[in-house]
Amino acid sequence: GAGVSQSPRYKVAKRGQDVALRCDPISGHVSLFWYQQALGQGPEFLTYFQNEAQLDKSGLPSDRFFAERPEGSVSTLKIQRTQQEDSAVYLCASSLANVEQYFGPGTRLTVT
Amino acid sequence: KQEVTQIPAALSVPEGENLVLNCSFTDSAIYNLQWFRQDPGKGLTSLLLIQSSQREQTSGRLNASLDKSSGRSTLYIAASQPGDSATYLCAVRLGSGNTPLVFGKGTRLSVIA
Image 1 (cartoon, helix red, strand yellow):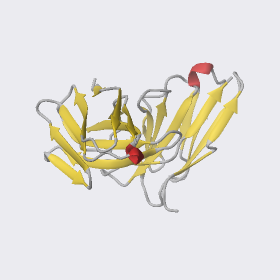
Image 2 (image 1 turned 135 degrees about the vertical axis):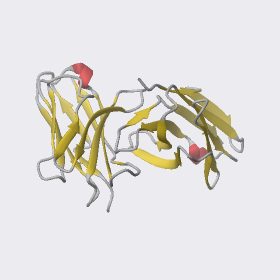
Image 3 (image 1 turned 30 degrees about the vertical axis):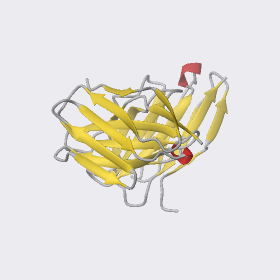
Image 4 (image 1 turned 60 degrees about the vertical axis):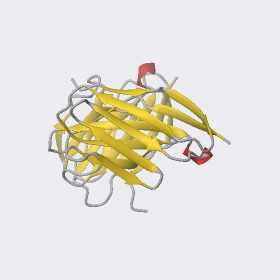
């Protein structure tokens, strides 16, 4: 399969726990985006990487959210001290420069 | 700040009907507009992408139009089928670089057999 993959697909965390969500983009795609989709809402932008450089993190809701892409391929979104309002689907998308974004299946995070 | 609105929020139609989903955006300086389909518990599937210089795109039973000056797009689905039941999302991209998409909240479509 040559699509974007994300893991885990489902994650249940107790309030206060740290979580790490992984995204494997399409091979060769330089750009990688993270979005957060709350229930009944459209996806909202969190952060953007071009290769290993994080060019835009304006959508990250708090300093508990951190993303990295150290080798310009796989990316990890980390959420520290999870809160109930962090419950959402986290979507990853990748693209070649300037063209269509391809989305992964998402990780559904539930914070109890 | 760009805002994207989709109307209606939900729609239920009998099989075979033609239908129109609406999308509006506040900033007409878009690079392109994309329509996605999202099935429950799944990611986004791109349906149609319209560049800012284009007026419409067609794929099978789907036709999307774009009126950039008025900030509107429509997705027309012909001869709807139960398999078309899903949430349809409209998204716009600003600028010419690799900028993020700004999404509407979606229209939840149910096609009844």
